[in-house]
Length: 467
Image (cartoon, rainbow, N blue to C red; front, side):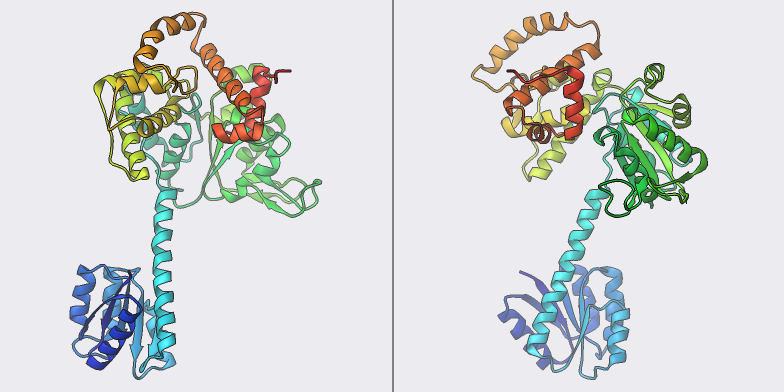
């Protein structure tokens, strides 16, 4: 029920307005002067105020100005027995939502109140959404490597230096890029993100630089590229190791000359963009293999920030897990669950092939499937190092008992971590594809990756549908 406040020194007007609004199921309070009205606004949680302009003790316009300082988003409807166009304009300039004359027309009054409440709700919702959208998560952890990353961000962010962020998938490269932008002098300008691995090679140039109408078959209208959208701000090129050589050449030119040309266009466009790039590949090896330009590598790699794998900083897992626990429970609107020492130790012992992203998913799974206290048995029951979730007829103890022998023998068959990671990724994708009867779109949605990225994984691992 919306809560309204009436401020008017005429008892008859207050009584009439109150009677009408309470009949419409509004919760109404009233006062006969502006000073008391401001005190009520400070203490109460009102959704809208109806305020007379001509009053004793304090003028209605002054009440409006003072209220704007206390609660700037609170809708004010000004009412007056001597209403003129000039008065209405002045009230609007001072922040009033609307202006009505005495005696108020019943229908106009109710419509104006309803519109004022709708506007107040929209303002509140917009602010909440903006906070959620712009909120950058903290870089969690106190390990030496994470402390060094935070220190580097503090020193590098205010400069214009380009930064190359390296690390495995899911390690938090995007988060580092966001903090570099947040702490830069460009923080008030846009951060535009491009996942180069998710865009087909034939479309990457159009995505980055835009295109003119008619420049190719499907170019039915002009398109602004990411470089132009990021003008004055920051452009984050994620998975840049997957960018085509032709697109690399154009990015290099943009970095050198601060100019771009749209696909199919002749006009050169000036761009003022700070470029951050990230990759999970060894770019020096890619250069050797002829897949990446050395000159672009040196342009991008002014500052290098390497984000370590989660298994390289297991001391940070308790802090990260607790943070995920609290935020996920809050999102679900449920009491925060506890996680005991045995469960935390079990989490620290897992291989985390999916890195921090996998840890987030694991905590969410534990919150949903476990009791009030998350135990070591829960972790063992709901985590399968091969990439899937094992929730079957076997008990937690049985799983724990079989894990030691089975995992040890399987781990011995891998020479290094990358081999194990590729194996786990291949088996996971194969399992999901078979589960979804090789429906690539459905599988991509289920495992939360781009369809084009899934196709490249299928090709990389040589996966084929069984005859």
